[in-house]
Length: 278
Image 1 (cartoon, rainbow, N blue to C red):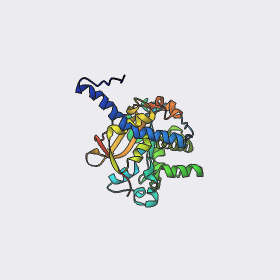
Image 2 (image 1 turned 90 degrees about the vertical axis):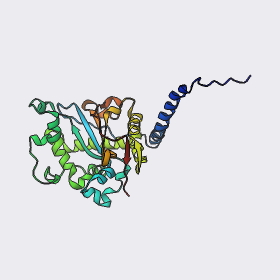
Image 3 (image 1 turned 135 degrees about the vertical axis):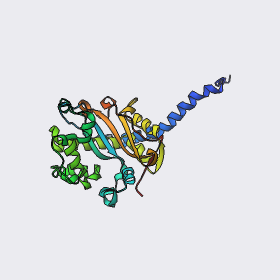
Image 4 (image 1 turned 120 degrees about the vertical axis):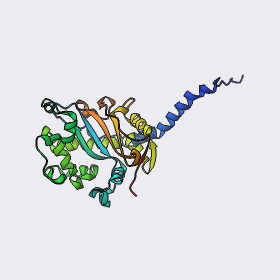
């Protein structure tokens, strides 16, 4: 006897099914990318270790380089020179790794806003002039220099020296340790399905929620609040940066869901453009 087919009794009964299918369709490219990444290269970058006393968490700030360059009225050197843009649209690049307010600064009455604004310059004022005056040349191995050059095009403008001077120099974080950890974290994000989703959609436009869904598909359910999207341009529609909160005592576990901590909400529009270099 033929099997009797059953259907929802009312049109409203279709809505949950339709919403479920829409959510699955939105995540399908992310899941395919995740499977491809794991199949092609199951090896991960070495887990970073970084110890800054009295710090609760770190904020990993990653720039989407084409979006950053398009948003600047006076683009820096790394945006103007083709050699420094090469490969930068294949993933996020490093802006910085920012420790949260250390306890010893909080004990002096310094609040989080002031720490984010001034950082280690509270103790050692920054020299006048550009980023290159903030700190002497970094003392890194040749191998780490190469990895950092690839991960941080802004080094052409001494961004690495400035980031270390502002966020790490006063916390007894060795230069090599700080940047080795930073590079490993960038590489982990770019190797993830979230990094793949953004790269796949460069030159186009996606829903803001699709970016959050892609992040959760890559790093775990309910991890979307650890991601802060930063956008520029008219109406905040151009993706320029993402920021990811990572617990200080779980840095070596990144990108496990348990290593992530909440970030403040960003200010991106409901539709986000992901620029690419032409």
